[in-house]
Image 1 (cartoon, rainbow over the protein chains, first blue to last red):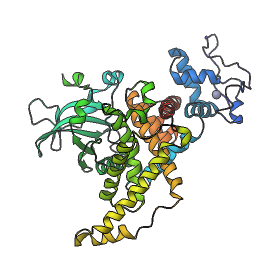
Image 2: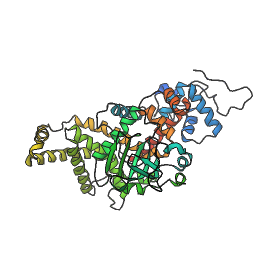
Image 3: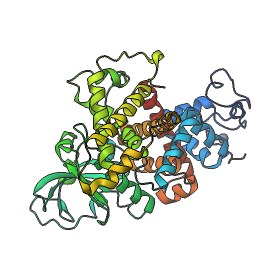
Image 4: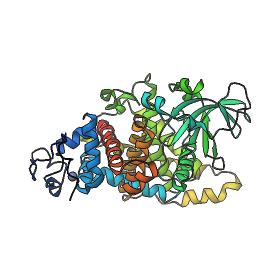
Length: 241
Length: 198
Ligand SMILES: [Zn+2]
């Protein structure tokens, strides 16, 4: 395992000179023995834990990330620390395989609204809403099929949740739109539609009703009644003006 | 999803509190899809599996006050598995007594011919619960991450794509993919640990 030496004269912020065999005291419970032996130049387990927590200075963080680019051992070490062993990673893959199997009802996600952090709210680019057609209703942000988008109520890694007026049914609904950047991915698309179908199948007083699943829309869209959407903190102020 | 970690630990206690609206929502988000899939696996049509899920949730809400929350006496999901099986049995019995209209004869026949769930199904239930718990936890932490971090996690850890492919798709470095993936995994691990149901 090799990695680039620090530039001569620069102050290297990460201590890469720990002994090759790291203390087993804190590690033996979570990591197999083979993981304990690391190259002398790699950051310590403690360092990786700090990296996970995000508590390192930006420069150190960048050095650690750079090291991860090239060091397969540390990639594996970091994953293991994060997952607390192999089982969580195994479950993640089982979920992925069930989703890919396209069995129709495997691995539905509950119909919950993606929440948005303040950081995301300010970082979201305006072209997130570029898929909307011009609004045909005063005050609307834009139009998607027969939905007039009124506000953005949430944003997640896979989609955007809009408060919208349904022109066909004449009521306010929440619609979840698959992130345009993922709409071209067959896997993401199938999963998105399946989630909606599964959510629609599990109707009860604690789960909101799904009105509609539209795979044909570009991007795919599903909607449900807006009583839950209104409980979400709105994060549309920036987008509204 | 912004519960303090202290209250998160006691989901099963929280649903006893009739005023805690979020408790039932969290609870149903975790267990309803599991019961729905159990019903589908037992051969029920969507609508019947939906009925089953309703019955099971109803049974839980009736019984929850009598339940002792003592993990040493068995897991909650083990108890719920028993409830789901009993409700499935009841559903079949009811279907048997009250045949549907003639249009549904085929579906009705199928329903009555289904074998009772056998003992092997508890392994299925356990594995399915772990997948569902993972999905539930991912939903709860998703909002804490930037979209690119979330996608880096999902595409590698769940979909099994290579870090290099995901890095070039998202326009970030391989190291950033591993960092994002690991941070999300770490949060999911904590969310699951807080359930105290292992
Ligand atoms: Zn290394």
